[in-house]
Length: 259
Image (cartoon, rainbow, N blue to C red; front, side):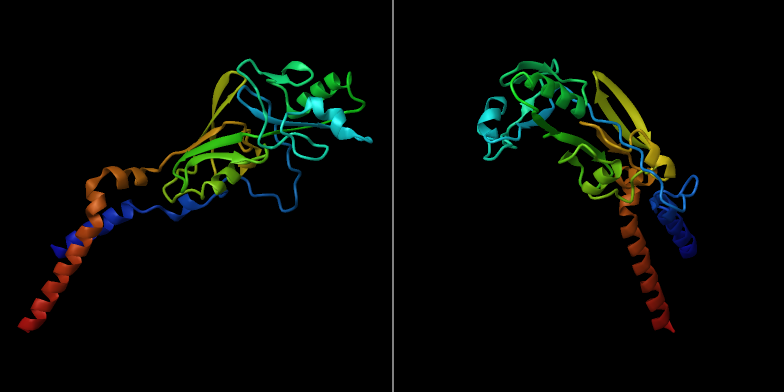
């Protein structure tokens, strides 16, 4: 009887364990090339409503600060680049910003490079060879599910990969389903859903390898995780196993005393 109980407990413990191959990434598909390969350029990020942009205008010359002052936000830092990083231009729900000295500019749907050219062309009426720098102040993404620190994160750059995002979130837990990670993406008034398989070496060519502004990443659990949360028996199984060990020890000691 004791032998059958021990076998049953062992089988249940094996069912609740995560297999080693499930924890390894990039272990499926064609082998990686032996030598270096060209890195494909990430798709350019486009400006969307609710984006916060840091736009700085400056020129070279004897008195660049006073020349570009009307075209930068108030409360500027010292030096030729006048915008304070705490400030920014918020793109409204129509995709428009109100730029000082110029007025309304529609930037939604434009890449950073295209927006830079648009502002430069408008500034040429007032400035000789203006230089415009633009960057996102609120490039953010959210990662949920089976990661160690789920949260919404803000990145200093718009060049963020899904691997970097997982790393910032503390890496995946042992119960993460690495084969079916969901990426929810909203852009140009549309929502799309993509899937990423971390076991597949082709992940580096996926359109979801590089994140976009406001992407949501959801890492679903594997069945073993569902069992640990929902099955009361599985949760008390370690205590049952310890109890059987104690009982076996008592039986053995009792038999020794009798002998």
